[in-house]
Length: 292
Image 1 (cartoon, rainbow, N blue to C red):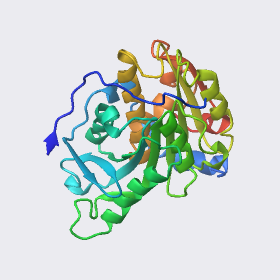
Image 2: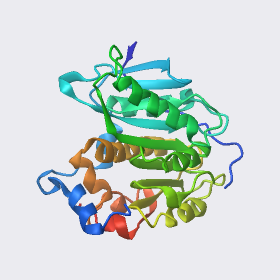
Image 3: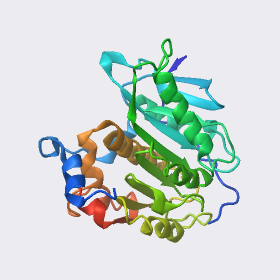
């Protein structure tokens, strides 16, 4: 069925117990530069608003919940995939508003129906199911998926699972939210955004930053969400939705309006200068050379 998303509060249920391009820089800068000079940047709050698509939510594949635009493939659009991993004891319904929101912006979300997502394997299986459906005549996804754009994101144990999944060559970007200890950061091969909570005592910010610091082989950004604990209370969850959507739109859909939120000179980088939302931001040397 088709459901319109709402900007309502949502609960990020997660781990009750959680431990705590080898590409040349010129080539990287060239590949990401595109037509950025001619596109006006927008604030991350732009992506906090619902996107233009209705949302369909179904069960399918190897025990997956799939969220996708109700008008999938309209006007010949090919949509990217985001594999999602839940925190310990949680299910995709725990993150329903967030996953719907990504789908309103054109992302096909393949969420693993597992309460133990740390291996990343269930996440990958769900995302690869969508790839297989893109190739199967008669599928709603047939010919409507961009198989070259495949993200992995997750929260807490699922954040560790996103890092584990990110070692697979099919994954082009990762977004670990307050990640546990799973996965090996040095095996990531696509840009990564590490999110911490300023007041998170389950997976402390310093631990997330230590994982980010290991990502020397890829462009990586660390961002600490001001006022947030492990469950993203109040407005912090809306800010989280916005930045997740913006990162996904830029890295998976080539949305140049989102570039300046993360990249370019520190004086103009969006999250670098939004102290009301972000209490700390760090960008490694490979992220710093990506044009704004």
